[in-house]
Length: 118
Length: 113
Image 1: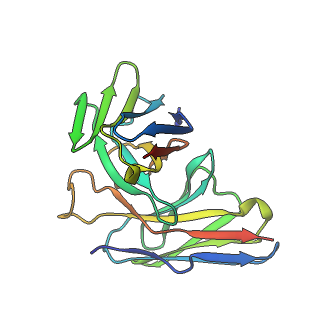
Image 2: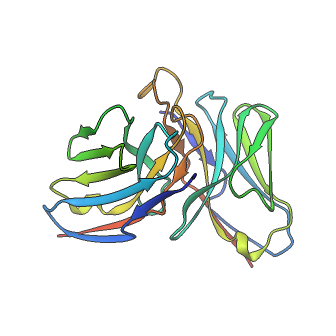
């Protein structure tokens, strides 16, 4: 069974801290994504990566950075956490070729990290 | 141009009824439209998806209706069950699902027994 695993389900940090959110996928896919989910706003793309050491900004990259040193791992970094970054963070990666609908490779999500910044 | 607008924000339906959630998009270059279902404490899971070359896709009790000229698509849940109570998101992307998704705002669906 394919998996996207986020290292923490709940995280509480203080304003100004540097925060690392980790995501690991076992689907051997080049693409990985970080979204944040807020009520009434849906999911919004923060950053994505199409390959190791490659990254591209999504729709709301301000205050965030990412790291992709290995194919299976994609880290989201809050450089200096602020209260407006309190949110649910979701990592995603597509299903590999040969599984599911191969023409679409739909994205598979982790269960999220609920981050609170105090 | 990148937005996907979803309505309603919340929906209450009686058991056995039909649940309908609507989405509208602006960018005609979108060519892949998935729906995701999310239960509390879980990440969104793909429910059903459609491409604009068909007007309807059905999988069990779930149907996507797609109107290309109106730039709208909707999810219909027939014979709604309490187990369908969840948050539903529509989305759109360019190319296949491996590309970045633009999501709607979400609909919290409650099915009353």
